[in-house]
Image (cartoon, rainbow, N blue to C red; front, side, top):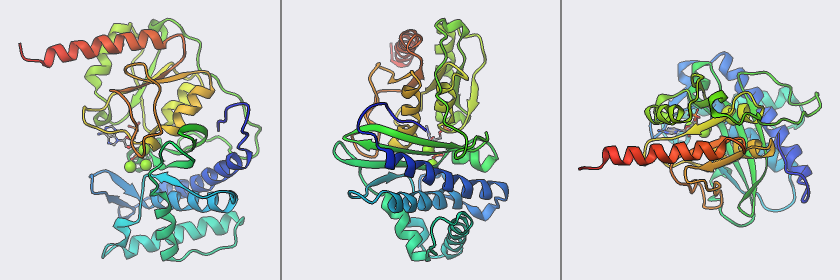
Length: 328
Ligand SMILES: Nc1ncnc2c1ncn2[C@@H]1O[C@H](COP(=O)(O)O)[C@@H](OP(=O)(O)O)[C@H]1O
Ligand SMILES: [Mg+2]
Ligand SMILES: [Mg+2]
Ligand SMILES: [Mg+2]
């Protein structure tokens, strides 16, 4: 959980965000334990989506709408109802509806039973375009769906944008257990390592999500000794924020467009823990441009001491890559 100090306090919104993520996490845990092939679908872009991605998005939308009653509601979220409205999708919609209603009944906070139509419209509350003005929730209902399906790491990542800036976030991580309610919140901080030789780095578990030959050459330039730690989802941001490792970097293939829900929550958790998040040119990430993130090649999260040398090595590696690929 993360919130900058000072005004405005966003107390109601933070409470709602924690509650929404906790409830969604419960649904995800249930599904992951007993996942079957029919729970997993393929989207138009060939990436996977599961009943838990949909169920999580419905629950988060519902809780935020119930708990935050002032102002209008806007949410930029990854999933929508399109595929569930197609012929042959009735069975999976039924399964999502049951999962959501069961999770709500077990929690007991809200005495409601959702119809299939209500599930579809709750999903579509996430279709907002976001942008630079007003408040927008940003949700990745399951970040790291591939990890989730594999029985590995995933995260539920929720953030609030206000006037184009991320002001609070709640991330629920799947593979490590940590109490969301009950135990008092603990302040976390990034590590204090200042020599890259002693730094370790996180990157995607999925080889297709980051260019490993490129990150390998950056690591070599920096003199990093430790092997990469490869995990799914924004848990990587969480791990850097807790000082479990020094750097998280991400260099997708050219042409891949990053979405804001993949980074909004994670990046504020790192900056609140004293770290910094930049693109490869050293610019801050800009969440005010709609559903996609406006950024130069790559994203780097680390502490303030290491960022200058990481950026220098990244820029050198980019230059070498360009030289190697340009015709003589
Ligand atoms: N070719 C690609 N390159 C980079 N990222 C990709 C990608 N295809 C999918 N992704 C994104 O990578 C996210 C997972 O991040 P990570 O690699 O850090 O685990 C996915 O989030 P979802 O699982 O929410 O779809 C998806 O948005
Ligand atoms: Mg994601
Ligand atoms: Mg997702
Ligand atoms: Mg996805």
